[in-house]
Length: 603
Image: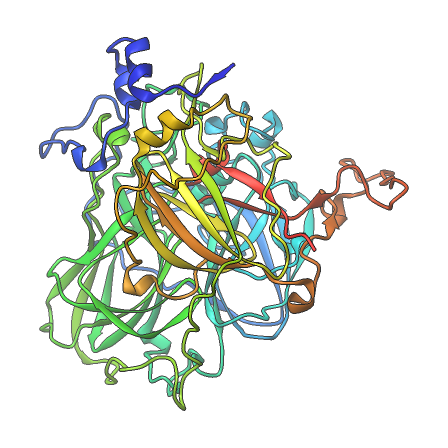
């Protein structure tokens, strides 16, 4: 039985013991910082390795209207001084996948195949989670999702449309959307966290006539060797150098965790690499591909850099910053100028975001660095930072004004408890993924989603298919809100309006958050408001509410490859058909249990 109990009362109920102390919530600003050199006995720790000894890999680039993506079990060397570790990768890469570059408006067909064998993190799969079978350890399924893609439902990588080892499926991506910074990753039900963590992720850069990615592009942006995708991650390693998703002995092996801060940073699959750079301007396409942590990114010398775009394309003009917060799943498009640095000088890309309290009380500390840039004595890209990116002769149209909604919808983010170890589960609307009580926005409507986060922690919320604009974040009197609207047992929808419980004015988004996005950081104790337009079938060129088979077409003959068939009802529907899309927290540990719900865009 599940109990949505308040966390301080939970601590009293369990005594002042360790487990209760681990799970009580407090503001992130209260997070303790371990003294230098002190290693918490409540955590597993990675072996000490020397930073900045491996050169940062340049991810290979693939192009074409018909591509193959094959997920395989591999081994990968993350650091010069570590042995090869079991991992997952796409297309023969030992870790991650190639960067796909593709033009806007040109349909892309991707043949996805699963050739994985025993999972590198098999022992960490939790078979109590929705949809996870014991067989997944030796034969893990996969589901390919193009994050940010305006994609028909049967090609979106629905978490329940699994491709099992030996199987494959064709994905059709219309690419009838604006240029932007997309990425692809695994989305298999209940094991997304271990599949992505083990290596199943890659970038897709969608180009148009303004942002061609070629030297001499109309906007005068760095290109070629001066445009570099950076896949940022954090990770734990075992004493023998293997990847580990398990952070603490408090939770038994094979038990789900609510997420952990890694103690080692990776860029493009290497631990704390270095990158030689010329003295000039670089364009860095940055992705937070972590499972858990929000980062506050800055350069070690606190030099200025510019945000020119985010998830779905360019801003109207560059935004000068000295730091920015980036949550899992978010992307930013940066310009960094190394011109003023002397040959031989180095600068690090760093992070100083404190762990959330529940992690810090275990002894987790800030993961401080990602990579080092080494300035060479040679000239680089000589162009300057553009004054404008949209509007005028050489750029796309300026971003339109935010539309006025006709529907206001309240949704909630909470962390109720059940009698298990660990006791927390994650929930949207106080429901589990299996709930049929889903959101049903109508095609062609503009809605305001007020995302009420009663937890003290940030949660990046991602909606499949659509993009949105951020209105802002409003502080919430969380305790008063919960006292006025007691949270029922998990499984009963709970979406009370926050009207009357706001603690101050709405804070606007940061200037660099101004563009179109598909993921938003929902800070703890706030109401985060976004404006979403749900497109029509005519606008999309496909029916977003169409049903589609749960199993890949190549697997419909049955698991043994013989004789199976599907039986339709009188309306032509099959009982195992799927419909619609999902929305979820992009902290992958949260998504897997159970901060993900289905939704449909109905006519």
